[in-house]
Amino acid sequence: MSESAVAKWFRRITLALIAVFALFPVFIILETTVKPLADVQNTFQWIPHHITFAPYGQIWHTIPLLHYFTDSVIVSVISTVVAVLLATFAGYAISRFEFHGRKVFSLAVLSTQMFPGILFLLPLYLIYVNIGRTIGINLYGTFLGLIITYLTFALPFAVWMLAGFFSSIPRDIEQAALVDGASHWGALFRIVLPIARPGIVAVSVFAFMTAWGEVLFASVLTTSSTRTLAIGLQEYATQGNTDWNQLMAASVVVSLPVVIGFLALQRYLVRGLTAGSVK
Amino acid sequence: MTDLLKNGQVKGTGEIPPVRPAPRGLWWQRPKVIPYILVAPAILFELLVHFIPMVAGVVMSFFDLTLFTLHHWSSAPFGGLSNFRVALDFNGPIGSALLHSFEITVPYTILVVAISWVIGMVAATGLNVEFRGRSWMRSAMLIPYALPVYVGIITWSFMLQRSTGVVNTALVNDLHVLHSPPFWLLGTDAFWAMVAAAVWRWFPFAFLILLASLQNIPTEQYEAAAVDGASAWRQFRSITLPSVRGANLVLVLVLFLWNFNDFNTPYVLFGNAPPSAADLLSLHIYIVSFDSWNFGLGSAMSVMLMLFLLLVSVVYLRVLRRGGEFNV
Image 1 (spheres, each protein chain N blue to C red):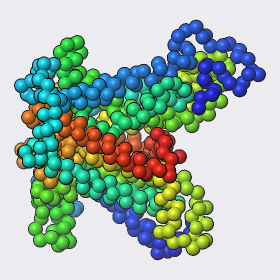
Image 2 (image 1 turned 180 degrees about the vertical axis):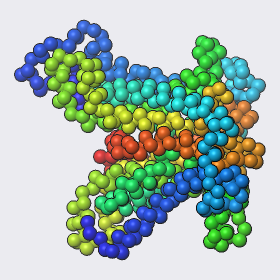
Image 3 (image 1 turned 120 degrees about the vertical axis):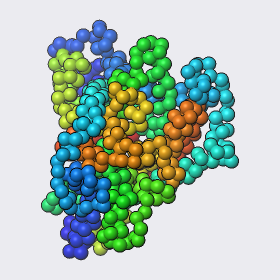
Protein backbone atom coordinates (compact mmCIF):
# COMPACT_ATOMS: atom_id res chain seq x y z
CA MET A 1 0.00 0.00 0.00
CA SER A 2 1.53 3.31 -1.02
CA GLU A 3 0.79 6.38 0.98
CA SER A 4 1.58 10.03 0.64
CA ALA A 5 4.52 11.58 2.46
CA VAL A 6 2.12 13.48 4.71
CA ALA A 7 0.30 10.32 5.70
CA LYS A 8 3.60 8.59 6.32
CA TRP A 9 4.80 11.30 8.69
CA PHE A 10 1.44 11.52 10.37
CA ARG A 11 1.61 7.79 10.99
CA ARG A 12 5.16 7.97 12.31
CA ILE A 13 4.49 10.85 14.67
CA THR A 14 1.29 9.34 16.06
CA LEU A 15 2.99 6.01 16.66
CA ALA A 16 5.96 7.71 18.27
CA LEU A 17 3.66 9.62 20.64
CA ILE A 18 1.85 6.45 21.68
CA ALA A 19 5.16 4.64 22.18
CA VAL A 20 6.38 7.51 24.37
CA PHE A 21 3.17 7.28 26.42
CA ALA A 22 3.71 3.52 26.83
CA LEU A 23 7.39 3.72 27.70
CA PHE A 24 7.55 6.93 29.72
CA PRO A 25 6.71 5.29 33.06
CA VAL A 26 9.32 2.62 32.30
CA PHE A 27 11.89 5.36 31.78
CA ILE A 28 10.84 6.90 35.10
CA ILE A 29 11.20 3.55 36.87
CA LEU A 30 14.68 2.91 35.50
CA GLU A 31 15.87 6.46 36.09
CA THR A 32 14.63 6.54 39.68
CA THR A 33 16.46 3.33 40.57
CA VAL A 34 19.84 5.01 40.05
CA LYS A 35 19.10 8.12 42.13
CA PRO A 36 20.02 8.50 45.80
CA LEU A 37 17.06 8.86 48.16
CA ALA A 38 17.76 12.56 48.85
CA ASP A 39 17.43 13.38 45.16
CA VAL A 40 14.24 11.36 44.79
CA GLN A 41 12.66 13.19 47.72
CA ASN A 42 13.43 16.56 46.16
CA THR A 43 12.17 18.28 43.03
CA PHE A 44 12.18 15.87 40.15
CA GLN A 45 15.38 15.77 38.07
CA TRP A 46 15.07 14.76 34.43
CA ILE A 47 18.73 13.83 34.36
CA PRO A 48 20.09 12.27 37.58
CA HIS A 49 22.69 14.53 39.22
CA HIS A 50 24.20 11.67 41.18
CA ILE A 51 24.17 8.12 39.95
CA THR A 52 24.15 5.22 42.38
CA PHE A 53 23.25 1.56 42.15
CA ALA A 54 22.87 1.29 45.92
CA PRO A 55 19.05 0.94 45.80
CA TYR A 56 19.44 -2.45 44.10
CA GLY A 57 21.37 -3.63 47.15
CA GLN A 58 19.23 -1.90 49.77
CA ILE A 59 15.91 -3.32 48.57
CA TRP A 60 16.72 -6.74 50.04
CA HIS A 61 17.24 -5.32 53.55
CA THR A 62 14.55 -2.67 53.89
CA ILE A 63 11.80 -5.26 53.60
CA PRO A 64 12.03 -9.08 53.39
CA LEU A 65 11.91 -8.84 49.58
CA LEU A 66 13.56 -12.20 48.98
CA HIS A 67 10.94 -13.81 51.20
CA TYR A 68 8.07 -12.20 49.24
CA PHE A 69 9.80 -13.01 45.98
CA THR A 70 10.08 -16.67 47.00
CA ASP A 71 6.41 -16.70 48.04
CA SER A 72 5.39 -15.29 44.67
CA VAL A 73 7.57 -17.79 42.82
CA ILE A 74 6.17 -20.75 44.76
CA VAL A 75 2.56 -19.69 44.29
CA SER A 76 2.90 -18.64 40.65
CA VAL A 77 4.96 -21.62 39.47
CA ILE A 78 2.84 -24.29 41.11
CA SER A 79 -0.48 -22.71 40.12
CA THR A 80 0.81 -22.31 36.55
CA VAL A 81 1.92 -25.92 36.26
CA VAL A 82 -1.36 -27.27 37.62
CA ALA A 83 -3.52 -24.83 35.65
CA VAL A 84 -1.77 -25.64 32.37
CA LEU A 85 -2.05 -29.37 33.02
CA LEU A 86 -5.77 -29.14 33.75
CA ALA A 87 -6.36 -26.73 30.88
CA THR A 88 -4.56 -29.07 28.50
CA PHE A 89 -6.92 -31.91 29.38
CA ALA A 90 -10.03 -29.75 29.27
CA GLY A 91 -8.97 -27.94 26.10
CA TYR A 92 -8.26 -31.25 24.39
CA ALA A 93 -11.67 -32.60 25.39
CA ILE A 94 -13.40 -29.50 24.03
CA SER A 95 -11.55 -29.49 20.74
CA ARG A 96 -11.72 -33.24 20.04
CA PHE A 97 -14.79 -34.74 21.64
CA GLU A 98 -18.50 -34.23 21.32
CA PHE A 99 -20.00 -34.64 24.78
CA HIS A 100 -22.98 -33.56 26.79
CA GLY A 101 -22.43 -30.22 28.42
CA ARG A 102 -19.58 -29.23 26.12
CA LYS A 103 -21.20 -25.92 25.16
CA VAL A 104 -22.28 -25.24 28.73
CA PHE A 105 -18.80 -25.95 29.98
CA SER A 106 -17.14 -23.56 27.52
CA LEU A 107 -19.65 -20.83 28.32
CA ALA A 108 -19.42 -21.31 32.07
CA VAL A 109 -15.66 -21.19 31.92
CA LEU A 110 -15.79 -17.85 30.12
CA SER A 111 -18.51 -16.37 32.27
CA THR A 112 -16.20 -16.58 35.28
CA GLN A 113 -14.33 -13.69 33.65
CA MET A 114 -17.33 -11.45 33.96
CA PHE A 115 -18.10 -11.59 37.63
CA PRO A 116 -16.69 -9.18 40.12
CA GLY A 117 -13.88 -10.78 42.12
CA ILE A 118 -15.29 -9.18 45.25
CA LEU A 119 -18.45 -11.30 44.89
CA PHE A 120 -16.63 -14.57 45.47
CA LEU A 121 -13.85 -13.16 47.63
CA LEU A 122 -16.05 -12.85 50.74
CA PRO A 123 -17.58 -16.36 50.56
CA LEU A 124 -14.26 -17.88 49.51
CA TYR A 125 -12.63 -16.37 52.58
CA LEU A 126 -15.35 -17.87 54.80
CA ILE A 127 -15.20 -21.22 52.98
CA TYR A 128 -11.40 -21.41 53.34
CA VAL A 129 -11.54 -20.50 57.03
CA ASN A 130 -14.24 -23.08 57.66
CA ILE A 131 -12.57 -25.86 55.66
CA GLY A 132 -9.57 -25.29 57.93
CA ARG A 133 -11.73 -25.46 61.03
CA THR A 134 -13.75 -28.52 60.11
CA ILE A 135 -11.50 -30.69 57.93
CA GLY A 136 -8.16 -29.39 59.12
CA ILE A 137 -6.83 -28.47 55.67
CA ASN A 138 -5.69 -24.89 56.04
CA LEU A 139 -6.48 -22.89 52.93
CA TYR A 140 -6.63 -19.45 54.53
CA GLY A 141 -3.22 -17.80 54.75
CA THR A 142 -1.43 -20.76 53.19
CA PHE A 143 0.27 -21.35 49.85
CA LEU A 144 -2.19 -24.14 49.11
CA GLY A 145 -5.21 -21.85 49.32
CA LEU A 146 -3.58 -19.19 47.18
CA ILE A 147 -2.38 -21.75 44.62
CA ILE A 148 -5.86 -23.22 44.26
CA THR A 149 -7.34 -19.74 43.88
CA TYR A 150 -4.85 -18.57 41.29
CA LEU A 151 -4.96 -21.69 39.19
CA THR A 152 -8.69 -21.20 38.73
CA PHE A 153 -8.12 -17.59 37.66
CA ALA A 154 -5.87 -18.73 34.85
CA LEU A 155 -7.95 -21.77 33.89
CA PRO A 156 -10.78 -20.17 31.86
CA PHE A 157 -8.53 -18.33 29.43
CA ALA A 158 -6.04 -21.20 29.40
CA VAL A 159 -8.76 -23.69 28.42
CA TRP A 160 -10.04 -21.30 25.78
CA MET A 161 -6.59 -20.69 24.31
CA LEU A 162 -5.56 -24.34 24.32
CA ALA A 163 -8.83 -25.51 22.79
CA GLY A 164 -8.05 -23.05 19.98
CA PHE A 165 -4.53 -24.40 19.58
CA PHE A 166 -5.66 -28.02 19.53
CA SER A 167 -8.35 -27.27 16.96
CA SER A 168 -5.68 -25.90 14.65
CA ILE A 169 -3.79 -29.22 14.73
CA PRO A 170 -5.06 -31.52 11.97
CA ARG A 171 -6.80 -34.61 13.27
CA ASP A 172 -5.25 -36.85 10.63
CA ILE A 173 -2.14 -37.14 12.74
CA GLU A 174 -3.95 -38.61 15.71
CA GLN A 175 -6.12 -40.64 13.43
CA ALA A 176 -3.06 -42.36 12.05
CA ALA A 177 -1.87 -43.15 15.55
CA LEU A 178 -5.27 -44.50 16.53
CA VAL A 179 -5.28 -46.69 13.47
CA ASP A 180 -1.88 -47.98 14.54
CA GLY A 181 -3.42 -49.05 17.79
CA ALA A 182 -2.55 -46.19 20.10
CA SER A 183 -5.16 -45.34 22.74
CA HIS A 184 -6.74 -41.89 22.97
CA TRP A 185 -4.50 -41.19 25.96
CA GLY A 186 -1.45 -42.26 24.02
CA ALA A 187 -2.44 -40.05 21.11
CA LEU A 188 -2.81 -37.08 23.46
CA PHE A 189 0.48 -37.48 25.27
CA ARG A 190 2.74 -38.71 22.49
CA ILE A 191 1.38 -36.87 19.47
CA VAL A 192 -0.81 -33.87 20.25
CA LEU A 193 1.08 -32.42 23.22
CA PRO A 194 4.48 -32.24 21.51
CA ILE A 195 2.91 -30.44 18.53
CA ALA A 196 1.06 -28.02 20.79
CA ARG A 197 4.18 -27.15 22.78
CA PRO A 198 4.38 -23.49 21.64
CA GLY A 199 0.76 -23.00 22.64
CA ILE A 200 1.34 -24.62 26.00
CA VAL A 201 4.36 -22.43 26.67
CA ALA A 202 2.36 -19.32 25.78
CA VAL A 203 -0.49 -20.34 28.06
CA SER A 204 2.04 -20.95 30.83
CA VAL A 205 3.34 -17.40 30.51
CA PHE A 206 -0.21 -16.11 30.66
CA ALA A 207 -1.03 -18.18 33.75
CA PHE A 208 2.19 -17.11 35.43
CA MET A 209 1.46 -13.43 34.76
CA THR A 210 -2.04 -13.81 36.18
CA ALA A 211 -0.76 -15.20 39.46
CA TRP A 212 2.27 -12.90 39.63
CA GLY A 213 0.19 -9.74 39.33
CA GLU A 214 -2.88 -10.58 41.42
CA VAL A 215 -3.67 -8.07 44.18
CA LEU A 216 -7.23 -8.42 45.50
CA PHE A 217 -7.19 -12.02 46.73
CA ALA A 218 -3.59 -11.73 47.91
CA SER A 219 -4.61 -8.83 50.13
CA VAL A 220 -7.09 -11.04 51.99
CA LEU A 221 -5.83 -14.63 51.68
CA THR A 222 -2.17 -14.10 52.65
CA THR A 223 -0.61 -13.62 56.07
CA SER A 224 2.89 -12.32 56.84
CA SER A 225 4.39 -15.78 56.23
CA THR A 226 2.84 -16.20 52.78
CA ARG A 227 2.79 -12.58 51.60
CA THR A 228 3.36 -12.17 47.88
CA LEU A 229 5.09 -9.31 46.06
CA ALA A 230 1.80 -7.64 45.11
CA ILE A 231 1.17 -6.83 48.77
CA GLY A 232 4.74 -6.90 50.07
CA LEU A 233 5.99 -4.04 47.88
CA GLN A 234 3.68 -1.66 49.69
CA GLU A 235 5.97 -1.92 52.69
CA TYR A 236 8.51 0.40 51.06
CA ALA A 237 5.99 3.08 51.91
CA THR A 238 5.69 3.79 55.59
CA GLN A 239 3.88 6.67 57.30
CA GLY A 240 4.27 9.56 54.89
CA ASN A 241 7.68 8.39 53.77
CA THR A 242 8.33 6.27 50.73
CA ASP A 243 11.71 5.00 49.59
CA TRP A 244 10.82 5.60 45.95
CA ASN A 245 14.22 4.70 44.59
CA GLN A 246 14.10 1.34 46.33
CA LEU A 247 10.47 0.78 45.43
CA MET A 248 11.30 1.37 41.77
CA ALA A 249 14.40 -0.87 41.95
CA ALA A 250 12.28 -3.61 43.50
CA SER A 251 9.74 -3.05 40.72
CA VAL A 252 12.43 -3.72 38.13
CA VAL A 253 13.44 -6.95 39.86
CA VAL A 254 9.80 -8.03 40.15
CA SER A 255 8.94 -7.16 36.55
CA LEU A 256 11.90 -8.74 34.77
CA PRO A 257 10.67 -12.35 34.75
CA VAL A 258 7.22 -11.52 33.37
CA VAL A 259 8.28 -8.85 30.90
CA ILE A 260 10.98 -11.06 29.38
CA GLY A 261 8.63 -14.02 29.19
CA PHE A 262 5.87 -11.95 27.67
CA LEU A 263 7.98 -10.25 25.03
CA ALA A 264 9.68 -13.49 24.05
CA LEU A 265 6.36 -15.25 23.51
CA GLN A 266 4.08 -12.43 22.42
CA ARG A 267 3.45 -13.99 19.03
CA TYR A 268 2.01 -17.17 20.52
CA LEU A 269 0.09 -15.19 23.10
CA VAL A 270 -1.61 -13.07 20.47
CA ARG A 271 -2.51 -16.14 18.46
CA GLY A 272 -3.87 -17.85 21.54
CA LEU A 273 -5.83 -14.92 22.88
CA THR A 274 -7.55 -14.38 19.58
CA ALA A 275 -7.94 -18.01 18.53
CA GLY A 276 -11.25 -18.41 20.29
CA SER A 277 -12.99 -15.22 19.30
CA VAL A 278 -11.57 -13.91 16.06
CA LYS A 279 -12.51 -15.64 12.88
CA MET B 1 -17.62 -31.68 14.85
CA THR B 2 -15.65 -34.73 15.92
CA ASP B 3 -16.79 -37.30 13.41
CA LEU B 4 -13.39 -38.89 13.60
CA LEU B 5 -13.41 -39.83 17.20
CA LYS B 6 -17.08 -40.19 17.88
CA ASN B 7 -17.98 -43.55 19.38
CA GLY B 8 -14.37 -44.54 19.28
CA GLN B 9 -14.63 -45.48 15.63
CA VAL B 10 -12.24 -43.99 13.19
CA LYS B 11 -14.62 -43.08 10.44
CA GLY B 12 -13.75 -42.85 6.81
CA THR B 13 -10.85 -45.22 7.17
CA GLY B 14 -12.79 -48.40 6.86
CA GLU B 15 -10.42 -49.81 4.29
CA ILE B 16 -7.56 -49.92 6.78
CA PRO B 17 -8.34 -52.36 9.55
CA PRO B 18 -6.84 -51.46 12.93
CA VAL B 19 -3.71 -53.47 13.45
CA ARG B 20 -3.96 -53.61 17.23
CA PRO B 21 -7.27 -52.21 18.47
CA ALA B 22 -7.09 -50.21 21.69
CA PRO B 23 -8.48 -52.18 24.61
CA ARG B 24 -12.15 -51.34 24.93
CA GLY B 25 -12.79 -53.04 28.22
CA LEU B 26 -11.16 -50.53 30.56
CA TRP B 27 -13.67 -47.84 31.52
CA TRP B 28 -11.23 -44.96 31.31
CA GLN B 29 -10.36 -45.91 27.76
CA ARG B 30 -13.92 -45.49 26.52
CA PRO B 31 -14.36 -42.52 24.22
CA LYS B 32 -17.66 -41.74 25.92
CA VAL B 33 -15.92 -41.42 29.27
CA ILE B 34 -12.64 -39.79 28.27
CA PRO B 35 -13.92 -36.23 27.75
CA TYR B 36 -15.53 -36.24 31.18
CA ILE B 37 -12.34 -37.45 32.83
CA LEU B 38 -10.47 -34.73 30.95
CA VAL B 39 -12.70 -31.86 32.06
CA ALA B 40 -13.43 -33.14 35.58
CA PRO B 41 -10.41 -31.64 37.38
CA ALA B 42 -10.93 -28.23 35.78
CA ILE B 43 -14.61 -28.32 36.73
CA LEU B 44 -13.80 -29.37 40.27
CA PHE B 45 -11.53 -26.38 40.91
CA GLU B 46 -13.83 -23.94 39.14
CA LEU B 47 -16.65 -25.19 41.34
CA LEU B 48 -14.62 -24.71 44.51
CA VAL B 49 -13.33 -21.23 43.76
CA HIS B 50 -15.95 -19.69 41.50
CA PHE B 51 -19.34 -21.36 41.48
CA ILE B 52 -19.79 -22.49 45.07
CA PRO B 53 -18.60 -19.14 46.48
CA MET B 54 -20.83 -17.34 44.00
CA VAL B 55 -23.88 -19.26 45.17
CA ALA B 56 -22.72 -18.80 48.77
CA GLY B 57 -22.37 -15.08 48.10
CA VAL B 58 -25.95 -14.87 46.91
CA VAL B 59 -27.11 -16.82 49.98
CA MET B 60 -25.02 -14.64 52.31
CA SER B 61 -26.63 -11.51 50.95
CA PHE B 62 -29.89 -12.59 52.62
CA PHE B 63 -28.30 -13.11 56.01
CA ASP B 64 -27.32 -10.81 58.79
CA LEU B 65 -23.59 -11.57 58.67
CA THR B 66 -21.77 -9.00 60.76
CA LEU B 67 -18.78 -9.04 63.10
CA PHE B 68 -20.98 -10.51 65.83
CA THR B 69 -22.47 -13.34 63.78
CA LEU B 70 -19.53 -14.14 61.48
CA HIS B 71 -17.94 -16.63 63.84
CA HIS B 72 -21.12 -18.63 64.11
CA TRP B 73 -21.98 -18.05 60.50
CA SER B 74 -24.14 -21.16 60.21
CA SER B 75 -26.54 -19.79 62.81
CA ALA B 76 -26.55 -16.20 61.51
CA PRO B 77 -30.05 -14.73 61.53
CA PHE B 78 -31.91 -14.64 58.22
CA GLY B 79 -32.41 -11.05 57.24
CA GLY B 80 -34.48 -11.43 54.09
CA LEU B 81 -34.05 -8.42 51.87
CA SER B 82 -32.83 -6.16 54.68
CA ASN B 83 -29.25 -5.94 53.33
CA PHE B 84 -30.59 -4.95 49.93
CA ARG B 85 -32.94 -2.42 51.52
CA VAL B 86 -30.04 -0.79 53.39
CA ALA B 87 -27.84 -0.76 50.26
CA LEU B 88 -30.60 0.73 48.11
CA ASP B 89 -31.83 3.31 50.62
CA PHE B 90 -30.30 6.28 48.84
CA ASN B 91 -31.35 8.63 51.61
CA GLY B 92 -29.40 6.68 54.22
CA PRO B 93 -25.62 7.04 54.60
CA ILE B 94 -24.76 3.56 53.24
CA GLY B 95 -27.08 3.73 50.24
CA SER B 96 -26.05 7.22 49.23
CA ALA B 97 -22.36 6.28 49.47
CA LEU B 98 -23.02 3.26 47.24
CA LEU B 99 -24.90 5.40 44.72
CA HIS B 100 -22.02 7.89 44.71
CA SER B 101 -19.57 5.06 44.10
CA PHE B 102 -21.72 3.84 41.20
CA GLU B 103 -21.82 7.35 39.76
CA ILE B 104 -18.00 7.42 39.82
CA THR B 105 -17.58 3.94 38.38
CA VAL B 106 -19.78 4.49 35.31
CA PRO B 107 -17.89 7.48 33.84
CA TYR B 108 -14.58 5.93 34.89
CA THR B 109 -15.33 2.75 32.96
CA ILE B 110 -16.68 4.54 29.89
CA LEU B 111 -13.70 6.88 29.72
CA VAL B 112 -11.11 4.16 30.22
CA VAL B 113 -12.69 1.81 27.67
CA ALA B 114 -13.23 4.57 25.09
CA ILE B 115 -9.77 6.13 25.36
CA SER B 116 -8.02 2.75 25.52
CA TRP B 117 -9.92 1.60 22.46
CA VAL B 118 -9.11 4.72 20.43
CA ILE B 119 -5.39 4.65 21.28
CA GLY B 120 -5.28 0.89 20.71
CA MET B 121 -7.01 1.25 17.35
CA VAL B 122 -4.75 4.08 16.19
CA ALA B 123 -1.67 2.10 17.21
CA ALA B 124 -2.95 -1.09 15.56
CA THR B 125 -3.81 0.70 12.30
CA GLY B 126 -0.41 2.40 12.29
CA LEU B 127 1.44 -0.84 12.89
CA ASN B 128 -0.54 -2.85 10.37
CA VAL B 129 1.90 -1.68 7.67
CA GLU B 130 5.36 -3.13 7.11
CA PHE B 131 8.18 -0.77 8.06
CA ARG B 132 11.58 -1.00 9.67
CA GLY B 133 11.48 -1.19 13.44
CA ARG B 134 7.88 -2.37 13.44
CA SER B 135 8.42 -5.29 15.80
CA TRP B 136 10.31 -3.04 18.24
CA MET B 137 7.44 -0.60 18.17
CA ARG B 138 5.00 -3.41 18.79
CA SER B 139 6.95 -4.67 21.79
CA ALA B 140 7.18 -1.15 23.19
CA MET B 141 3.40 -0.79 23.07
CA LEU B 142 2.92 -4.09 24.87
CA ILE B 143 5.18 -3.34 27.81
CA PRO B 144 2.52 -1.68 30.01
CA TYR B 145 0.45 -4.84 29.70
CA ALA B 146 3.40 -7.11 30.41
CA LEU B 147 4.38 -5.35 33.66
CA PRO B 148 2.70 -6.60 36.83
CA VAL B 149 -0.41 -4.46 37.42
CA TYR B 150 0.76 -3.10 40.74
CA VAL B 151 4.15 -2.05 39.38
CA GLY B 152 2.49 0.12 36.74
CA ILE B 153 0.09 1.71 39.19
CA ILE B 154 2.80 2.36 41.80
CA THR B 155 4.82 4.09 39.10
CA TRP B 156 1.90 6.35 38.20
CA SER B 157 1.52 7.17 41.85
CA PHE B 158 5.18 8.20 41.92
CA MET B 159 4.89 10.28 38.77
CA LEU B 160 1.84 12.08 40.16
CA GLN B 161 3.35 13.03 43.55
CA ARG B 162 2.66 16.68 44.15
CA SER B 163 6.12 18.09 44.87
CA THR B 164 8.47 15.35 43.67
CA GLY B 165 6.57 13.91 40.72
CA VAL B 166 7.54 14.25 37.09
CA VAL B 167 4.06 15.32 35.96
CA ASN B 168 3.91 18.43 38.11
CA THR B 169 7.55 19.23 37.37
CA ALA B 170 6.75 19.16 33.66
CA LEU B 171 3.49 21.10 33.93
CA VAL B 172 4.60 23.78 36.37
CA ASN B 173 8.39 24.18 36.14
CA ASP B 174 9.10 23.21 32.54
CA LEU B 175 6.05 24.02 30.47
CA HIS B 176 4.49 26.66 32.77
CA VAL B 177 1.01 25.38 31.93
CA LEU B 178 -0.04 25.61 35.58
CA HIS B 179 0.97 28.08 38.26
CA SER B 180 0.70 25.85 41.28
CA PRO B 181 1.15 22.08 41.38
CA PRO B 182 -2.17 20.23 41.79
CA PHE B 183 -2.66 17.35 44.24
CA TRP B 184 -3.28 14.56 41.72
CA LEU B 185 -3.83 11.97 44.42
CA LEU B 186 -6.23 13.96 46.58
CA GLY B 187 -9.66 15.46 45.93
CA THR B 188 -11.35 15.40 42.54
CA ASP B 189 -8.14 15.09 40.51
CA ALA B 190 -7.72 11.57 41.91
CA PHE B 191 -10.32 10.47 39.36
CA TRP B 192 -8.07 11.54 36.50
CA ALA B 193 -5.05 9.90 38.09
CA MET B 194 -6.95 6.61 37.99
CA VAL B 195 -8.09 7.11 34.40
CA ALA B 196 -4.53 7.84 33.25
CA ALA B 197 -3.09 4.78 34.97
CA ALA B 198 -5.89 2.51 33.71
CA VAL B 199 -5.73 3.74 30.10
CA TRP B 200 -1.97 3.24 30.12
CA ARG B 201 -2.51 -0.31 31.33
CA TRP B 202 -5.39 -1.28 29.01
CA PHE B 203 -4.72 0.33 25.64
CA PRO B 204 -2.04 -2.31 24.89
CA PHE B 205 -4.63 -5.03 25.33
CA ALA B 206 -7.00 -3.33 22.87
CA PHE B 207 -4.03 -2.84 20.55
CA LEU B 208 -3.09 -6.53 20.79
CA ILE B 209 -6.54 -7.84 19.93
CA LEU B 210 -7.24 -5.25 17.21
CA LEU B 211 -3.87 -5.73 15.52
CA ALA B 212 -4.41 -9.48 15.40
CA SER B 213 -7.73 -9.07 13.64
CA LEU B 214 -6.49 -6.28 11.33
CA GLN B 215 -3.82 -8.63 10.05
CA ASN B 216 -6.53 -10.91 8.72
CA ILE B 217 -7.77 -8.23 6.31
CA PRO B 218 -6.28 -8.76 2.84
CA THR B 219 -4.38 -5.66 1.66
CA GLU B 220 -6.01 -6.02 -1.78
CA GLN B 221 -9.21 -4.68 -0.25
CA TYR B 222 -7.50 -1.43 0.63
CA GLU B 223 -5.74 -1.25 -2.72
CA ALA B 224 -9.02 -1.69 -4.58
CA ALA B 225 -10.66 0.97 -2.43
CA ALA B 226 -7.74 3.34 -3.04
CA VAL B 227 -8.07 2.83 -6.78
CA ASP B 228 -11.74 3.73 -6.48
CA GLY B 229 -10.66 6.93 -4.79
CA ALA B 230 -11.90 6.17 -1.29
CA SER B 231 -10.35 8.42 1.36
CA ALA B 232 -8.42 6.97 4.28
CA TRP B 233 -11.35 7.69 6.61
CA ARG B 234 -13.75 6.07 4.19
CA GLN B 235 -11.51 2.98 3.96
CA PHE B 236 -11.36 2.82 7.74
CA ARG B 237 -15.13 2.99 8.02
CA SER B 238 -16.09 0.59 5.27
CA ILE B 239 -13.23 -1.92 5.40
CA THR B 240 -11.44 -1.81 8.73
CA LEU B 241 -14.33 -1.39 11.16
CA PRO B 242 -16.59 -4.09 9.67
CA SER B 243 -13.67 -6.53 9.52
CA VAL B 244 -12.76 -6.20 13.18
CA ARG B 245 -16.39 -6.31 14.28
CA GLY B 246 -16.22 -9.83 15.69
CA ALA B 247 -13.11 -9.16 17.74
CA ASN B 248 -14.40 -5.76 18.75
CA LEU B 249 -17.61 -7.16 20.17
CA VAL B 250 -15.71 -9.30 22.67
CA LEU B 251 -12.96 -6.75 23.27
CA VAL B 252 -15.26 -3.91 24.28
CA LEU B 253 -17.36 -6.16 26.51
CA VAL B 254 -14.34 -7.63 28.27
CA LEU B 255 -12.74 -4.21 28.74
CA PHE B 256 -15.99 -2.87 30.12
CA LEU B 257 -16.41 -5.72 32.61
CA TRP B 258 -12.79 -5.68 33.77
CA ASN B 259 -12.75 -1.94 34.31
CA PHE B 260 -16.15 -1.81 35.95
CA ASN B 261 -14.84 -4.37 38.43
CA ASP B 262 -11.47 -2.64 38.72
CA PHE B 263 -10.07 -3.00 42.21
CA ASN B 264 -6.33 -2.74 41.55
CA THR B 265 -6.12 0.84 40.34
CA PRO B 266 -7.78 2.60 43.28
CA TYR B 267 -6.43 0.10 45.83
CA VAL B 268 -2.78 0.37 44.83
CA LEU B 269 -3.05 4.16 44.42
CA PHE B 270 -4.97 4.93 47.59
CA GLY B 271 -5.16 1.80 49.76
CA ASN B 272 -8.07 1.47 52.13
CA ALA B 273 -8.91 5.17 52.14
CA PRO B 274 -9.55 6.39 48.59
CA PRO B 275 -10.58 10.00 48.00
CA SER B 276 -14.29 10.22 47.36
CA ALA B 277 -13.67 10.90 43.65
CA ALA B 278 -11.80 7.60 43.32
CA ASP B 279 -14.20 5.40 45.24
CA LEU B 280 -14.81 2.68 42.61
CA LEU B 281 -17.41 0.01 43.37
CA SER B 282 -15.15 -2.99 43.94
CA LEU B 283 -12.99 -1.09 46.43
CA HIS B 284 -16.10 0.45 48.00
CA ILE B 285 -17.63 -2.99 48.60
CA TYR B 286 -14.29 -4.30 49.86
CA ILE B 287 -14.08 -1.52 52.44
CA VAL B 288 -17.71 -1.95 53.50
CA SER B 289 -17.07 -5.68 53.95
CA PHE B 290 -13.68 -5.74 55.65
CA ASP B 291 -13.62 -2.51 57.62
CA SER B 292 -16.93 -3.12 59.31
CA TRP B 293 -16.89 -6.92 58.80
CA ASN B 294 -20.43 -6.69 57.47
CA PHE B 295 -20.22 -9.55 54.97
CA GLY B 296 -23.99 -9.75 54.51
CA LEU B 297 -24.18 -6.17 53.30
CA GLY B 298 -21.02 -6.57 51.21
CA SER B 299 -22.47 -9.67 49.55
CA ALA B 300 -25.74 -7.89 48.80
CA MET B 301 -23.80 -5.09 47.09
CA SER B 302 -21.69 -7.62 45.13
CA VAL B 303 -24.82 -9.44 44.00
CA MET B 304 -26.34 -6.19 42.75
CA LEU B 305 -23.09 -5.37 40.95
CA MET B 306 -23.15 -8.79 39.30
CA LEU B 307 -26.81 -8.45 38.28
CA PHE B 308 -26.10 -5.03 36.79
CA LEU B 309 -23.17 -6.36 34.76
CA LEU B 310 -25.19 -9.37 33.65
CA LEU B 311 -27.98 -7.09 32.46
CA VAL B 312 -25.57 -4.81 30.60
CA SER B 313 -23.83 -7.82 28.97
CA VAL B 314 -27.08 -9.42 27.85
CA VAL B 315 -28.46 -6.17 26.42
CA TYR B 316 -25.13 -5.44 24.75
CA LEU B 317 -24.92 -8.83 23.08
CA ARG B 318 -28.61 -8.80 22.09
CA VAL B 319 -28.33 -5.41 20.43
CA LEU B 320 -24.98 -5.90 18.70
CA ARG B 321 -25.15 -9.56 17.84
CA ARG B 322 -27.67 -8.90 15.11
CA GLY B 323 -25.98 -8.93 11.76
CA GLY B 324 -22.67 -10.24 13.03
CA GLU B 325 -21.63 -13.69 14.06
CA PHE B 326 -20.20 -14.19 17.50
CA ASN B 327 -18.55 -17.42 18.51
CA VAL B 328 -17.42 -18.31 21.96
